[in-house]
Every structure is written in C-alpha cells, then in structure tokens.
Length: 482
Image (cartoon, rainbow, N blue to C red; front, top):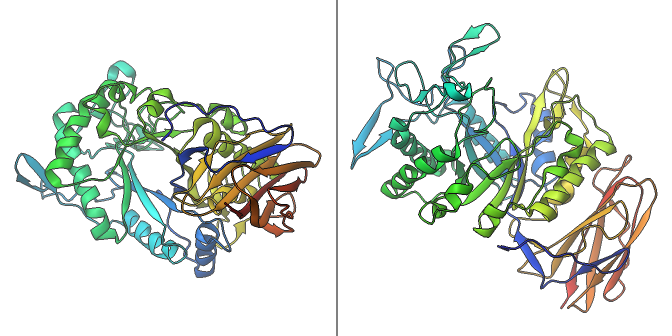
C-alpha cells in the first residue's frame, strides 16, 4: 500500500495516461448495508433488487455487504441475540480466563443477511461481508455500559414515547472490556460456520463520536479505543480468530480516534482497517470531505468508507448521480480508499430518501430508477476486488474527472470518466509502457441512459479518443497488449 500521497500526473490537456507500472491502492470492493432491512416480500421485487445490486451483467456488481451485529435489547425491540438465563443475565462458559457467550444465530436480522448472501452469491462468488455493532450488549441486569455525563452521553433515552432504551448511548464500562472482546471474538469465529459465508472484517463500533445519541449507539474516545484493543487482541489469540478489525467508523472523514493507537507500536498491528463515514451538511459536496489520512496511510492501514448517504427526499436525476460519482472519484483518488460502501442497499417507504441506492414504494413492489445506483455501478461493476488504481490524471480537462484501474493478473483496464459540465468533451486515452489497446467497450449513464452499452472508442495503437456527452458518466473497459 502506498505510504506517501499520490503525485500529480500531467499528460497534457485532455489526455489520460495509462501506465500499468504506476500502481497506487488495491481495491477491495464496493457495497452497502442491509441493517434493519428485510428483503422485499414480493418475489418479483426481491429478485429485481438482488439482480440490480449484484449482477455484473444486469446490475452494478457489488461485492460487499455490511451487516449489523444485533445487540439491541430495548423495551420495544429485542433482537434476542445474546442468550440469557431466567434472571436475565447473559449465559456463557468459561475457559482460560475467557468467556464464550451463547449466541442466537437464528436472530431475524442475521437470517435476513444469510438469505441476502445466498441470493447475491448466485451472481458472484466474490461476495464478502463485514459486520458492525451499533452498541455493545447491555440490559438492566448485565450492565456493560455506563454514563459518560461529562460529555452529555448517558445510557437510555426516549424514542417516540418509549423510554429506557439500554441500547442507546453511554460508553462501554472498562470492567467489561474483556467481555465485549470475547463476544466479538465469538461472533467472528462463528460467522462463517453459522452463515455459510466468510467474514471479511469486524468493526468495534458504529459512529463512536456522534452526539447526541438518539439511536442504538455508544460513544468511544481515542483513549478508550487504545485501552480496549489489548483486550480484543487477547480474545482473538485465545479463540484462534484472525478476522481483520475495523476502527473507528467515525461519523466524519478522519482517523483522529484511532491515530494514537496507530502511533503505538504495540497497538498498531491490532487494527487492520480504518473505517470512516462521510456525512456532510450538504451531501452534494461530500467529495470535499475526502482527504489523505496521514496516520492511516503512513502505517499502511487499509481505508474503507463504510457508510454515507443523504436523508433528503429522493432525487433520481443525473445531477444527483454525478454528485455521488464525484464523491467516489474523490475517495478513490484523493483519499485512496480501498473500499466504498453506501448506506442502505434498498429501502421501502412512502417518502423515499437518498439513504438507499434503491427505493421501493410503500407496497414494496415498485422500484425507483435512481441515477446514484448506476453512478456506483460505473465503479463497482468494472473495478473488481483485487484490482489496483493507477497513478494517472484525475482531471485532464475542465469539468472532467478520471480514474484508472487495472487487474494486476492480466492486461485488463478500466477508466471511469465524469463530465460534470454543460458541454461535451473529448478525452484521449494514452498507453505508456504498452504497445496497443487490444479491445475496448464503453458504458454510459446520462439523463437518458443507465449503464448503457454504447459505441466503443476505436483503439488506434496506443491511443483511443472518448467523447463524453455533457452531464454524463462513462466507463471504458478493455485490455492492452504489453
């Protein structure tokens, strides 16, 4: 993984240079979450949703599913994932100073995830999952969380007219650090056996720095992460777990909560992936949040955007699609992320929001055709797990943004080009260190097209010209001769 920021590449106005030797970060996948969301009950809608999300021929070819670890135990919603005895306390067995908790893998949310994996994997064997807890376990009998009154973060709260939610707010009590580490290890160890699919990574906490807490949540400070990681390491070693760890999944695009741990030589090896979210007050400018995170990159940690979206009413326009494509472009080229995940994969509501890639109506049968779905697809369908980004021009001409990717095992390449301007532009693809393009295909999204196969550019030895209509997204996929 590159540990220095990318250099500026200049190939001349309107030129994108493709040099297979100039590699940057490895791409691990694109995806989204199914947290709290069941698949549509209507069989036709369910099949269409899964195809649109995961097919590489009739959809956008996603490869990552972010699921929720269901620790919720509120008075209204109890996931019943942690088995309890008659007195309401968690049940476990003990060995060697560690507890092995009894977990209910038939929980409704996990069963939804298992079904989604099964349906998605029919389209691609590359489907992988990673899991996030929104809160550590906590109830009125086993109180693992305590108040953090100094920061206005107390356990409980009221949602609607329901009060005393033990899953909302507070912080993990240090007396239960090893308990929480043990149950995360139990989850990671049991996932593949119980779900039938490999677990790519497990997170410690969703949005640990977001206040006030009004949803299933817990706060964490940088010091608390540093204090917890040794307990997690002990649990991983004792239980033979090798699953990579994600931290901190901050609400914003920074690594300040994990930077102290990354600067500690004894703690840095315990974190494999730095997770960030990318929420802005104006989501049309989310791309401005992307930055090269020095603490993460200099320690050679993988960087994942694990969540972003917008709560605004649905906007199915190409303008909205270009906003999201511009954000992914910045994440890939400026921040050099290794994985990009939208928030919800789909939602069903009477007033659809931008919180999901696919909106179904209130009946769960009719799908809105959102351009942001295809904006993600211009990357996810063509840039597959294991591909690397090449160091190339990122803005070859005004209002045009470009990024280049290559399969390191072959001579296959993909170039994603955005034209956010009001007039057409022409960009020349120029090979360096290779003799000629062997084949090229071209896919486009515009106001009237959605990942449509269009007439490809004609390869002319080591160059090819691509015409980019106004307000459009284009991916050129092809191969070259060494």
